[in-house]
Length: 471
Image 1 (cartoon, one colour):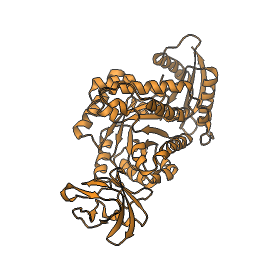
Image 2 (cartoon, rainbow, N blue to C red):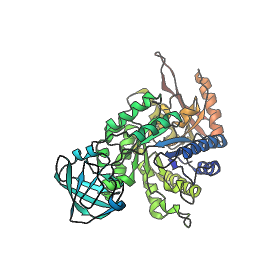
Image 3 (tube, helix red, strand yellow):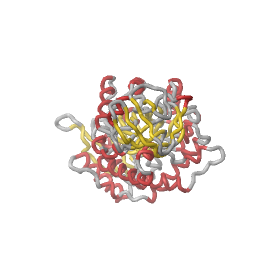
């Protein structure tokens, strides 16, 4: 049974319920709806399909919304494009002008104040490169390092620099409010570089009564990597967004940063997702098998201990969305059989009852070869802590409602089922065994490990129970 979760971006190739159902049965756990591309109608259709697939399969498929993020772009160009010639100079000005070979404007003039001599400016996903050689009150002068043809409103970035532009744009604010009003369990926010970016989004969630929406921060810059622990202190996890990250840092550093981010998430008990170009060759009509390099890429992310891997264009516009999910699931499951996750115990302190019980649950499960861990949980915390320790057996979270189960959809190895609120230990044990038998085939003599919590003197539920049950 696959433990690494699969996030699938939803688009024209995958938004019909029949196709999505096949993807879920093949291994998809979370549907990603990208605000950058999906129209209102496409969003509504994707949500409706997810709800329908939940009914058909009985699986707690979650929804992850993905924001566009702050954008730094050039303005309109003369004749729709200008040529940048290496060695020549060009001004970037605060004034709104039609771009020429001498100067062009940007959508956020205040960003120019953040620039300094020596800064590198990347244009159109690093296809072109400028270096700031002079700074004035109303402009900067740049030397063209790598030239090309610059069109209207193309993307711009400045590696390592926090630009003076609003993190939450008007468009993003509207999209975040839309997410608050239309359900979903996760919100991925783009181009996060500081803790303050996250807090700004959390304030919007609070205003609209959705503080429960889990925030996944897309790390796409060197500054985001530098501030990773601060960012994680106010969020629920990160997405290693390798596409944009690869334009901001040397490409050879991307796999290093990927490993570092996964390790940091694991140590702090946060979610990690690895994304971008994982099975891109399967998008075409004549290729239904992954390349060996792609297989290795996915396998290495699994070996690093990522919670989830993600498909983008492969499932939005690709020719083989179902086959792509199946291929990714197969790679994950096979790799997990040979992986050693002993390092998972190198986490931030086991200094409370829940963490202590969880560690003993995992040690007992692995030592005895138990088939399943059943975790009775109201908030999902018990299952999350166990997941972070990477047990050999899958984790069945027994939740009091489906919403809590869906909130666990990105946690490694966790599957969920509903269980009514139970007051006694005996009831929990009896129902856990029944749910375990429904979840998977168990034979006489098989072992399962049951854990959960009960109210203590201050009425809070903590994980304080562990029992090894023989079928």
